Amino acid sequence: SRSGGLAGSQSWRSGRGAMETFVLKNERGVEAHVRPLGALVQRLILPGAKGGRANDVVLGFDNLQSYRDGTSPYFGVIVGRVANRIAGGKFTVDGESHQVSVNENGNTLHGGQVGFDKAVWDLVSYDEGKSVTLRHVSKDGDQGFPGEVTVTVTYSLSEASDSDDGLLLVDMSAVSTKSTPISLAQHGYFNLCGHASGSSVLGHRLTLNAKEYTPVDDKLIPTGVLAATEGTPFHFPAPGVKIGEHIAEVPGGFDHNFVLDQTVGREFDRLKAQGLHLAAILEEEETGRRVELSTSAPGVQFYSGNFLDGSITKEQGTKDGATYNLHGGLCLETQGFPNAVNEKNFPTNVLKAGETYSHKMVYQFSSS
Image 1 (cartoon, one colour):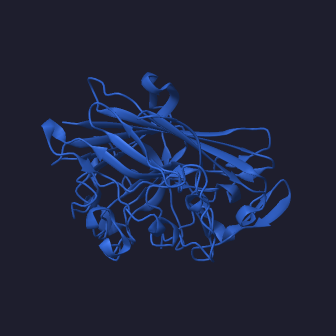
Image 2 (tube, rainbow, N blue to C red):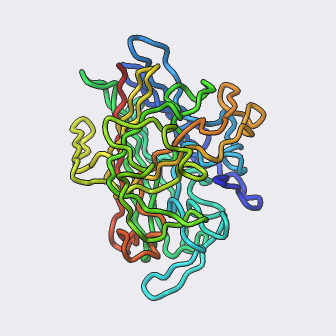
């Protein structure tokens, strides 16, 4: 599953702004509501096409406790120290072997039992309505990982342009006192019909800028092979493929890392975000909404909400009393490759002392 419970009773740290909401908003009506718990995007409100109704398009809770107690399958949070899976929770860095916290089928998922999503991040700065910067310090030995790591995330919302309703930049960085694997991801679950619409995402049209993907074993660990997407259910070429078109051919649904074609470059002068490449385009016909995602990362995990089963309801404090059914939301998590620390063929995710990890992603919102 994708549940992420908090083992034991860890006291709530009420640091500066722990319970605050930082609202980013532009003149077109795009809003992102950011919380220090897990550096969470709790709400993302997008306008409808042709003056249509605005909707909150990300799954989540009003109740913060549900983000901490294992109810939430990582809705909207920043996950780390290593996003996705590490086989057996084992790896060797600089000749030293490490066993880290395991929390899914004997593997480490999204940083282990108490990942960055469970931390209350400290407020660094807030430019009202425009940007917020949060920071978290992960101690040496946290969940078994080496090195004290300082991670920072900035969320910035731009004004609209003639061609879009605005851009949301997620700018993640990290430094460490020792060599350690680092791969951060923003784990938002999208439904462009609206999170409480009751609609599945199987009718959404998806383009993935990837000619290859990384096949997985029965525990969702990559086999180490890069396989061609063409001629398989994993092929999502422009102008997009409906998610439901081939999902029945993929046992359990999509939960795979795609190898991004970094030749399709993207620049965003409004947010001073250069050197990115296209990851994905997500479109929904009835609302006219379109989200184009660009990133500096080598991969994107496409997850089709396979573990949502209707058990997350208003009883757990969902926003608007929503019930989240199978495929009620999807994730597009730009990232380093899963289990990269153990795969020599994959781009390394090891950060050395004195280096800076950087991962930028830009969501471009539009409606037509």
